[in-house]
Amino acid sequence: MSASPHLEIPAGFEISIELGNESVVVAPIGDLDARAAHALEQELEGLVARGFTDIVLDLRGALFVGSSGSELLDRLEANKYTDGYTLNIRAGGGASAGPARRRRRFQRAPSARSL
Image (cartoon, rainbow, N blue to C red):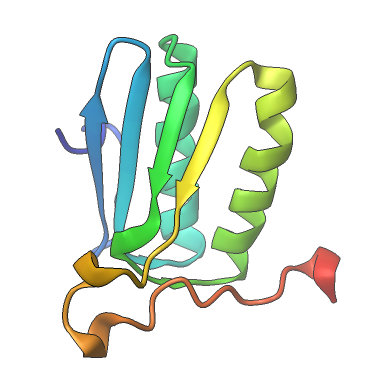
């Protein structure tokens, strides 16, 4: 399944979704820049609102995580305590990461909080 049709997804970016009963695997594919982070956040908020309580964010397809993407990950981690969901993050770079030229994924830029 792909992202909700009402979302504005930036060109070159995709959000793959695998639904379970109460769990969902969300896999962004491409660069997780400001526009993509906004679309991903909207998608995740919609899934939590629909009652999914176990969220796996699979970043193996993320080629780059910019500062907006990094800040989103920080917010998701903090909000899971108040919004009632569990969050597990799968970072990239493993054997299934694809060609070596694409293995620059998950290069987190420093967020404003870490500077």
